[in-house]
Length: 107
Image (cartoon, rainbow, N blue to C red; front, side):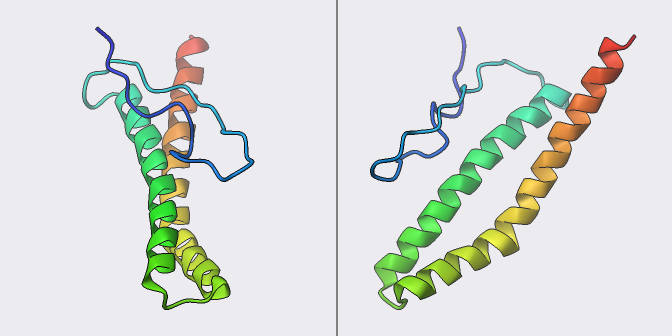
């Protein structure tokens, strides 16, 4: 039996009028402490980051403390300060996996 992790689209809910970006859900069964396990974590963390930014915006709107411009600024600060470094680290995991795959293939 295959355990499906993730979801079929990048965003849980897309903006009105936008076609969803379809992605493959994670279906690999992988042992702990392997490259594929690190990639699985990166995949799931990237989706969680997308959800976090969406939630940050929703929270700012619900607080009614911000104008539209203030909401955009708040979301940008979270994205740049917290999520961009996380995406950078996740990208490093993907680069390391590509390098490892290249070494295996070139043998």
